[in-house]
Length: 441
Picture 1 (cartoon, rainbow, N blue to C red):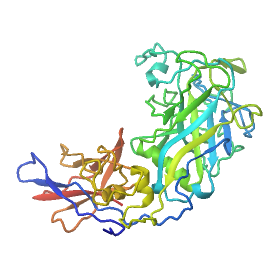
Picture 2: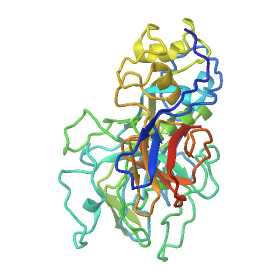
Picture 3: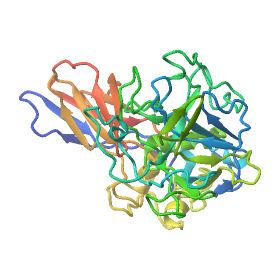
Picture 4: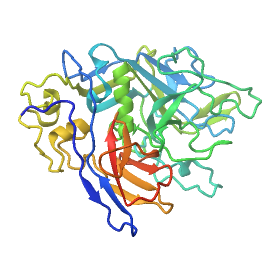
């Protein structure tokens, strides 16, 4: 059976249990779907590959690498109140070309994205593959301090955030670090670097994590690194030898992180930042301490930062069995073209056609587009929870008659596990019935 594209679905209403007397609220579980993907033509769908060296790498440190030619980049933490706590950061960048770009962000299906870094100094730090909460970095005299439960500190990988008018395209190896104050001042470089390690906050915005363990004017907060580096060269707690390889496997289960990676491949510029809080010590006009040092692409005999990925790009116009499911999508998930648009192999109640249109995984029953919770707040506003997928935009609509569906003003925040929480911005007038639905734009 041929299924027209784009697909459109009619929703199903479910009455809310325990509604206040005189008020009946009903909730739309399935939703109107995409108005268009855009046709993409590609010579090959398998775009897996490797780049053995970055297009740019830069030690981002106030008094460090100003032209991108330094052979070693250090990641360390400074607890001097005049600097960012994540004082030494390592910017990594790959420019992607050819069939890797312009595929349309939603059309990239990734199995893995990995960065590999090589250690440049022998036994300079202890290996720790586990996350450390921010409280373990605080001073022992601070009330929130708690001791670290294992030896060492992790090396973390984040996205890249920019300020000072810079972007991934315009910040180059020789671009300025940012504002650097006088050595005798109280702020030499706190919150002034033009590129920084960044994570997504609950509003879906990239935020600077350079001072997550606190500095003057910065309250501490927990970070969500995109991955933590691991190695097979040593056991946890042991000193790491020179030339040990650290693998950073990006957490693609996070929809916003996956969206960042997809967008980067689409435009052809992937930028990531390695960071750690290994304590550096100020000694006169120099520094000391035990911290990681990494080879850059400028190190003649060293292994440069490497990018590996396993992915396909869906060609939406290639559908040899004419069933409305692109061949690339079927082969990626099922290794064959045997499934049809009305099939539901994972038994989650969503057909393959619906899973294709909503960006969910047709082989995973936990991956489906639905309203997972709804409630009325104490002030009468409505709150709705639903899962999100990378590179999809959502809005909430309301109706009194199931005919007219105006958008409802509200704010979306993001929770762990790829869950969005939408809250109505203002209290609605009292009506006998209100229906809600979530729409993929």
